[in-house]
Every structure is written in C-alpha cells, then in structure tokens.
Amino acid sequence: MKVYDDKHIKNVVLVGASKSGKTTLAEAMLFEAGLINRRGTVEEKNTVSDFHDIEHERGNSVYATTMHTEWRDYKINIIDTPGLDDFIGDVISSLRVADTAVMMLNAENGVEVGTELIWNYVEKFQKPIIFAINHVDHNKADFDNTYEQARNRFGKAVTLMQYPVNQGEGFDSIIDLLKMTLYKFSPTGGKPQKLPIPPEEQERANRLHNELVEKAAENDEKLMELYFEKGSLDEDQLREGLMLGMLHHDVYPVFCLSAKKDMGGGRLMGFIDNVAPSATELFAEKTVDGSELPCDPKGPTTLFVFKTLIEPHLGKLSFFKVMSGEVKTGMDLVNSTTGHTERLNQLFIMDGKNRNPVDKFTAGDIGATLKLKDTQANQTLCVAGKNITIEPIHFPDARLRVSIVAKNKADDEKLGSVLAEIHQEDPTINIEYSRELKQIILSGQGELHLNVTKWRLNHIYHVDVEFEM
Ligand SMILES: Nc1nc2c(ncn2[C@@H]2O[C@H](COP(=O)(O)OP(=O)(O)O)[C@@H](O)[C@H]2O)c(=O)[nH]1
Ligand SMILES: [Mg+2]
Image (cartoon, rainbow, N blue to C red; front, top):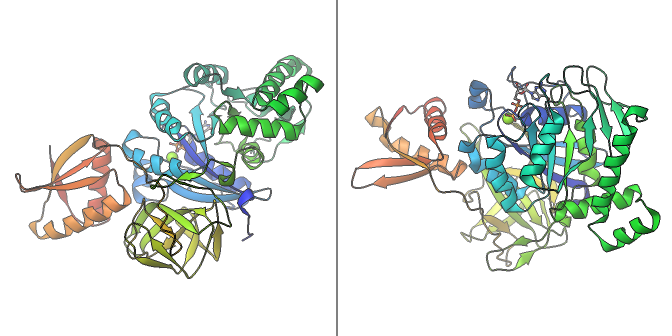
C-alpha cells in the first residue's frame, strides 16, 4: 500500500435519497481504480459496501460503510451511507468526519423528500458539497430539470461542471465545462475517449464555461483581478477559485453520472483529487474546551472515534479519523473521557468487511482498529498529557418508543447486554428501563429503525423479542 501524505488524502461521504445510486457509485469508484476486478451490483448482493446480511435482505444500505480508492496519486476515503431517514445516525457521524459531501440526485426524480431531509444535516456541518446527478442513462432521466430543481432549492451556488449530451438509454457522452472536452464512453463505461466539443454544443458549452470561470473568480480578489485583466483563468487558477468557493459554500459543483454503466466516476474522482479540499485545508476542528485543533501531521496525535461496529466473531471495531498528528501500530493513546490508556495494536484500512493492515495513518486519514477496551464512538484518543476532546457529534432525539420483551424469559438478561451493544453501534437507538412499567423501553428514529433492530436481535444475537406500542 502506497503511503499518502496529508495533502493527498481526500475524504468524501456519499449521501442522498434512497436508491439514488450511492452504493453503485462507490462500487464503480473502486472498480475504475482497479481495486476490485469485478463490479458487484446491489441486485446481486455482492457490492463491497452493502456487506451486512440485513442489507442483502433489504436490497438497500442500512449502515455507513467505509472504503478507499486510489486515483492518480491520491487516496480517496469513501463513506457510503444509507439514504433512509431511519438510519440518519450513521449519516450524521459520516458527515462529521468527511471533508466533502457528495449529494447524489436521481435524474428521474430530481430533488426528493429524502434529499431535503439529508440536506438539513449536510448544511449544518458546513462541509463542501458536490452534487452528482446520477441515472442519466434512464429513459426518464431529466438532467436539466434536476439541475433546475437543485438550483431553486439549494441556491445559486449550484454550478454546472458538466452536462450530458445524450441522456436516456443511449447515454454515452458528457461535456466537461472545466476541461472543455467531450467524454465519450464505450458501452461498458470506464475510461472515456476525449474528443473536441461538437459544433452544435459549442455555444452552450462556451456560455456555461464562462459562467463557471466567473463563479471561480468571485471567490478571491486576486483571481477577480486576473480575470478582469485577461478575460479568463488558467486551469490552476480555476481549481483554486473553485476550491475556495467550495470551502465557503459559494460553489456546489454539479457532475453527471451513470453509476450503473460506470460512466463519469473517473472524472468525479479526478475533481475530488484536484479541487475538493483535504482535511488540512478545511477549518480547524473544535474541541470541548472551546479551542481549535488544526489538522496538522506535526500536531499532537489525536483520533476521533466516529463509529463502532461489533462483529460477534471478531469483536469491536472502532473507526476513527486522525484529527492531528500521526498514529502508528503499537502506540498508546489516552481516552480523554475515561482517562484510560488504549494500545492500538492493529491498524486497518477498511473496505467494506475487508481489513487491510497498515503501519500508520497520518492527519486527515480515516482508519479502524480492533479491540479497544474502553472506548466508544464519539470519544477522543490522544497522546498522553494533552487531554484534547474533540467536540462530540450530537444525535437527534428519538422519535418512536416501544416497550420490548424477550419472548423467552431466559433471554431477559442477555437482552439487556445485547441492547447495550446495539446502542454502542448506533447511538440513535436508546434503551431505558421503566421502573413503573417494569419494562425495557427501546427508542429510535422510526418503525423501520426499530424493526431492523428486532431483526438484528433475532438473526445476529438469537434473541427473539416482541414490541408493545
Ligand atoms: N439506470 C440506472 N440505474 C442505477 C444507476 N445507479 C444505480 N442504479 C440502480 O438503482 C438502484 C439503487 O442503487 P443503489 O446504489 O442501491 O442506491 P443507494 O440507495 O443510493 O445506495 C439499484 O437497482 C441500482 O442498480 C444508474 O446510474 N442508472
Ligand atoms: Mg446504498
């Protein structure tokens, strides 16, 4: 595994309404980069991202899954998230550690209710945003309408970087307004041919290109001056302007894709490499004592644990982002909440369920470790003597409560401990004991959320339960 420095690591989270194509895009991004040699599909239940049994059963993502890809000297960490509101907990923790949110829109449906729900969280985190309009190969795809809806709903920052030349079933060509090139794909997708923009598209492409340049120039006085002087900006200046625009929410670049046909993912990755900010370019992290921690590889080693996964046969996996410094295998770090020391015996890059061992991670990177004794999600591990606590994630309150009983009395005790594990994995599942009712009260984000919890109790922990509303 090649070692990437902090400037060459980008963290993106794929968010958007259910079925917009997030999991399919993640698969295409790994496949195009050659990290997997077979492209799985959601239908065949063999994608890297949707590896949990419940996801296979539902044909839909339930958990956030981390993966990585490598594209032209950059490492891109991808977190694929579930699109349904019931599973918002994992969307929130993923947004917290990502540096750019890729909001997927389905060109058949435009802006959906699910898009709006997730937008509320995306905005709260103030992270740079890219819109990826997917499904442009569908016969009902309407790219322009989807773009207009996004612009009406999310504002003038929504800025075209591309548009499809021939959306619908025959889709195979994209005009890129940054590179001013036509990308033409073979029927199997992948790497496109680069062709000149055809004469009939030149006027539209020029007009949109100029809009784009102006948008990039607006973000910096120096660039504005150059633009007035020369009437244009070169590619590096454009990149700089767009990156500043992304940082300040003045530019939400729009891309077009068919994730299913593997068309457009490579260009999107190239843009993430070259324009999307890395963690070191983002605003410093806030700590609970009101100070800030810049993402600096030379700073004090600080890991923020954003997610826990408990695999019955493997134990506890803790996912973290290196907020500062670097972490090496065998290092001792202190949990700033409990004061206990944890040894990080193993470090992994996680690609779905696959663990790839590595020796170290540097500031801005995302990794995982096994068997931390006493650390939960939302806690900080840092080098002894520093006592840094990263501002924790605030999860929404429960929206539905039920009382829960084991069908078999003998499971009563087990139920309590298993539910505690489930809460560790998903902080939006809460458990209280009602003395009055002498019952355990389970609460979560909705009926589906609680039913998935029931499914897990039954299929993974072998505890049969009943809900009483
Ligand atoms: N036609 C078409 N179908 C797609 C595209 N991307 C995904 N799909 C299909 O849309 C469905 C939902 O995709 P999935 O990746 O699970 O969406 P997610 O819920 O956002 O993760 C699946 O049946 C995919 O095969 C696309 O670009 N074009
Ligand atoms: Mg999915």
